[in-house]
Structures are given as structure tokens and as C-alpha cells.
Length: 479
Image (tube, rainbow, N blue to C red; front, top):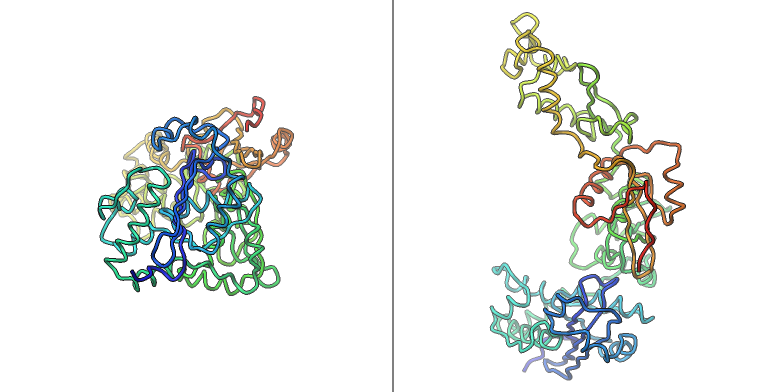
């Protein structure tokens, strides 16, 4: 048989205790060594994860705590496994999962592992674009592959090998070899960046910063797997002009680790506003930030300087610019036939002409105002209608009595951080109880940040947030 690929392959499949490589662990490994289109060896072993396997995972894989109790630990397997994988293209179905788990496992064993990868999910999408599903079960059904032990490492690895053979028969060896060469390239780093610098970036949540000549900030990004995300910027299949320009101009990479995704998102938003990187289009400073508040019987536009943790609850909407605020106000007024002149915005109300009716605004003439300006609606009724209509623009109500701490833990480093928030305003991030106290005792009332609000609201509504009200003691971090 003609060789399928130019380079030798290692088809890898893992079973694990869960989905997160930072704190979940490997329970089974299988490797098929392929060269010249032939299987040179099949190897698999159970692995003692050093932790209990969740019942749902045991039911899925059939691997029980009793089965792995006497199995070797990964640290004992690492040198031999490294030799099996070295110099081969790392092939896996959803390669990012298996490759990420092994990189973490090798790092914990004191070893650095790096390889060209080929994801057969992406390969299937490229070769069979007419099909919607490309998980392993779909491939087994669609291509009539044999899999004697689904969700066991060796059975799944054999199914992946069968898929490669079937795809080669259907598309031809040359087409397959070309596809693999394009997809399995190790990213070529920019000329001024040493690979050891990238290798030192942890595969963990955090923020990375690209700098150009004279330490000019070029780009700030965040990821739950920083090293992989940084390498993606320099992948051969990235055709974005912006990415190409970043690669030409970059001179230095810096990174800052966080305990979780929330911390990375908040830090990214803050650094973009502080550094104003050349290539970040979003999260820039909203210099025109404003919102509406009711002041007696009028509506008032308040500017950024007046928006803080004390005033945010009174705001009817928060906007990045005066223009967007006025557009939103006109939209609400049109929908509910509010009188903009009565609310205090005559310049919006009479734009376009004058009313023929004494006292009435132009919008009343074109039937966009119910007539509060012409005495056809009482001021009290109009004010109540306006308050109800503008309530839809309000930020989400702060559901706590005071400030809260959102706790994120990094089990791998046995570290934690607390994001202290009061009325949607971020006071800061603390690494200890003393740090929390210092933030709460700060003399300056924190400003409202629209991006922080959106990030926090999304995270707190997810049901995953670990929140403590800061009238109580911060609980100790459990590992």
C-alpha cells in the first residue's frame, strides 16, 4: 500500500476524569505508531489518576476506581511515552483536548512536550463539508468503522486509524498527504520571538501582551490556554491581514496568569483601556460614556464622571456615546409616544419642523407624541409612562445588599483570587483576606465600566460563580 503520509504518526486517545486539563487527570492512554501506512505498534495502559473518577465518567468509559488503583502513575510512564511520541505527528480526534491534557501531564512530570498535531475532527470537516456532524460516533456510523470498545482509549484510537484509511481510499493518498501537511504544521514564530519564550507561557488562564518597536503595545488578548492561543496567532492557516501585521511588528511577548477565565476577561478589559494597544478594536476607553437619570420631572443625561457605584442603580441605560444614548431615547419615545420636549430634550423633539398646534411639539403633529406638551396627557401620567418605558434600558438590578467577592481557584497552583465587586463596579482583585479588606476600605468610589458590567453580569448569571457577601468572612480556599 502506498504510504498515507510523509511523516510517521502517533494516533493518540486518552480517557480522563473530566474535561479540564488543569485539574482533571488521565486514566487511560493508547498510542498507535504508524509509519509507511502500516501500524508498527499498539500500546495502551491504564493510569492511576491519583484522584477519584466521577461516577458519570465511570459509567461512560467503564473504567472504575478499582481498575486504576494498581496502575502506574503518569510520572512513571512519562519517559517511555515521550519516546513513543517524539518525532511523530500527534493525531487525535479533537486533538486540542488530548494534546492539551498531555502537555499539562508532561509539565507536572517536569518535561516539556511539543509536537505537530493533526485533528481528525478538522480533517473530517475539510474532507466531508456536506456533513454537519464530525464527532467520532458520527464517523463510525457514516464510514462503517469498527469499534469494539467505544470510550476506551485503544478502541477509539483504532477507529481514528480506520477513518484515515477510509478517507485516503476515497480522496487519494496525494490529497490526504497535502491536507495533512497544511493542517499539521508547527507554527513558525516571528523572527524576533524565541521559541523558549513561547514555551515558557503556561497552558493556563490569563492575559498575553504583544509589544512592538520601542515597547509599543500592539495587542492584548486573553485565553484559558494562553500558550496555545499565542501560537494560533502565528499559525500558517491564519490569513487575517491584522494577524500578519502583528507577526511582522511583534518584538516581545509578556503574559500574566489568572486563576480563571473571569479574571482573564476583567484583566484584558482593564489593560486594553490602560495601554490602548494598536490592534485592539474593542474594549477601548469609552470616553463618551453616559446614561439617563430622572431629575424631578425631567430626564437628565449624566456623563462618565458622574457614573459610579452610588449612582449606577439610578441610571436608565448606559451608553458608550451621547449619540448612541440619543438614538436609544428616540427609539423608546417613538415606541411609547413620549414627549421628548416635556422630558427636557426639545432639540430632539422639534427637529424637522414646527407644530401647527400651540404649545405642541413637532413630534405630536406627526403622531409620535401622545400630547403631554399640548395638555392632552397629564404630566404625572406622562412621567410614569416614561419611567416604565425607560426601565427597559436599566442595567440589571444589583441583587446583593452590599459588595461581594467572586472567588476563582487555580487548583493546579493551589492559588485563589477574589474579585471584589460593589453595585457592578469592580473594586479590584485580591489574593488574600487582607487584600479584600484593603479594597473595601478604599477612599475612592470606583467608576462604572461598561465592559466589566457585561462580563460580570454574564458570569454571575451563568450559575457557575462562587460568590460570598463581604459582610461575612471569606471562606478558606479548598484544594
